[in-house]
Image 1 (cartoon, rainbow, N blue to C red):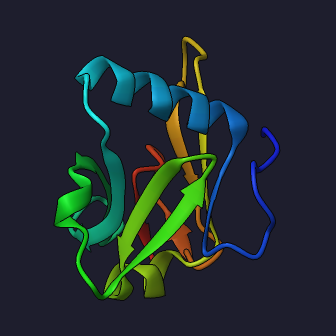
Image 2 (tube, rainbow, N blue to C red):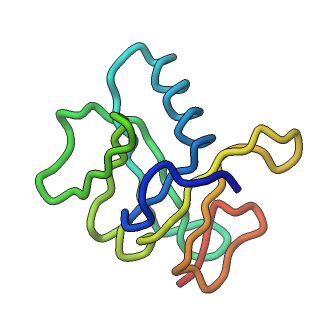
Length: 118
């Protein structure tokens, strides 16, 4: 796993490789976007992670915003209860590549790594 880009005191952690991939994906959109991270009901284990690029103007007053070298991660407070301390990583491996979530609050994780239970 790559090292986090900021101190371990942030509610959501992002590795250098994940941050680089997020910036690349944002640049392909041709806009200055933020990444909203959250959870929703569903998935193999009961809850699944969500990630979507959003316009900065859609950030709500009650959202938590984490800044990583000018790239903002946004999370609603309800989701943050389930994913506080989450480490977002990225791997370009042929097998098992893509974004990976390491959630210290998960009591069970699906084999695909995209859903969890608390």
